[in-house]
Length: 613
Image (cartoon, rainbow, N blue to C red; front, side, top):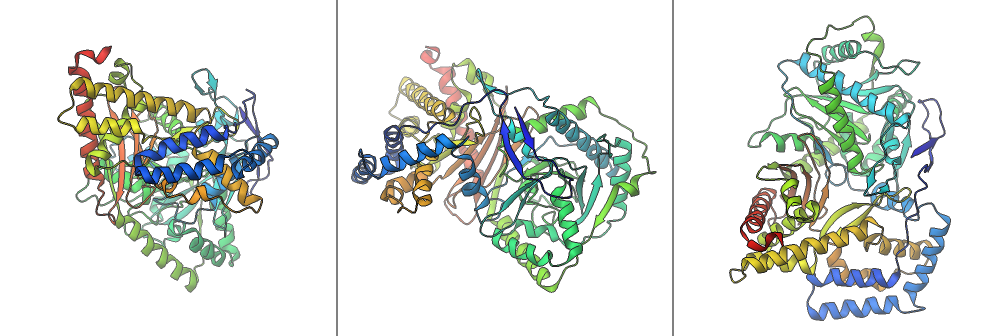
């Protein structure tokens, strides 16, 4: 897989042109209408009464009648699919990301916590950062040379184009829809320290990397000349997108500001050299997870960010390391692969002692200046206040479940992902005693330009499993049968979603087809049962990192949870979140319930004689 770019000098944005598939990947299918309606109806059942279900059934039947509105929209969607390489790709980018007006912080951009480092001095921090930069550039060079090993699901090759969209990419605030710009040939990065912003050249004119000694010295120079906090211009990127768009236009009235903005937007990625963060009452994984999500506000490191850049590494003086990434161009797994490469590279090329090369340090880094008007100052104050509200509202818990990992689950002839998903369902039901609509991300990268489909993990089987596990009258054999039925039911839906035959993207496509043709939105989309199934109280994703790390992000709804997990052979890493504004939810209680569920499921499997049958 490779992408063709229209190349330009890195000072000017280049538009990403269509990707070409050397593997001749198939196009995303349009599922049969009746299949989608039947699956969706079944997924609604856990959330509604019998009367409410009958109402939904009537609405769905009317929508799906031959010659009815659903059939008409289906024909139009099939026609669109015939003329597009991927009928969903542009729609999804716009509706899921670029038209979304809430802040990317908490609501969209995940954080990824990397293994904690032991820094005994600032020099250790900068040495690690220099090696991180080189490791990242090494990975990018492999992307550019099409040297990445093609990924597969089973025997199916996956679209690799997302890898070519993460370096040199930036989201620009616009109204009513943001814009993505691509600068794949840039030779510089951005370094932020105490809210000061620097352009750091990392590649020579010939495309070679500067040495770790040169980068180390440049980073030293940046630290030396930024002893005091600057005005946190970067906090503007954490605000509501319309607010940020207005502030951006104010900044752009000054030509000097325009040059600084261009430098940031065209950089390959951002590195934030962070101050020690206050972690009172928080364990290290949780505190580091919060730093990657939001920087804990402008009184901590929340102003030392540029959240619009696709990749932004965070290296804290205390050894906390991670990244935050703007979600528009790519899913989590390509980002996780970059992290795996970085950690392997640093381990292999570890240097305990570097003598700096000061001869070129001053030539490599350039401070970026902003002329800040009173109107921009007010926008910064507003953004800082709004970020603080997000910080105060988000409860998080990063933890490691160490009793077992995916090797044990596989030994029981069960799918690790489906097993963990059912543990999450069980944990939610234990806490709330109701079914929780449950979003899991499935990759559709087996198709050209594929992104995601929703796995609706809450099912009749998952609810029955949770109820059976909590029933004192149920026997171990009954509990075991319910567990296996729920896991296998989830696995079946997962396979359908991976193959492009889920529910949610198809129904979205039909709705957007109606809007695009000036037709009224059908009553199905306002049906109470359908809306309940869309209120995803549990937002989950598996992001596999080989190293001791995990991804973390905010909930989708106010009374919900975010739960990202990294199953490793002998443990499972989790990042969970909830909103303090909802008295019903708690990330801490959810962790406790999840650990209890995983423990009880293990005990059931190891103590029930029929477990291996």
